[in-house]
Length: 128
Ligand SMILES: [Zn+2]
Ligand SMILES: [Zn+2]
Image 1 (cartoon, rainbow, N blue to C red):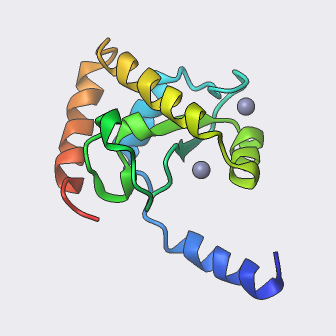
Image 2: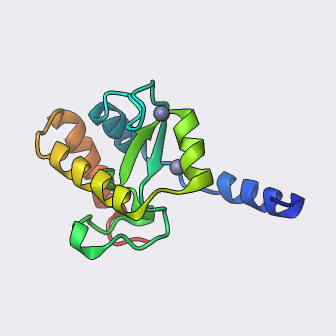
């Protein structure tokens, strides 16, 4: 990455909308605060399909501002978060992760937190 590119990347990062705390907490709890790849402690939450990308319709992920729906988010350790941003993820793997998140959500592991998430999602609905 050239110098000017690196600077631009940093600026974009600074301007990025953070994941709402309730959604972040929900995702980490769902994943037991563990990296979904290696099981190490997860400190970071990653967008499976990136913030501005199109999520395949058949996956049924509701349209939410910046793709912030918990079905599209996974917990990762620092190492694997960096790895995925450097190398990308196979298309098939993204879809498997979304399907896993959907299945886990039907278990309703924390209804109180789910209510908070629903409120956040309501605010983000229909926005880009
Ligand atoms: Zn990991
Ligand atoms: Zn990420």
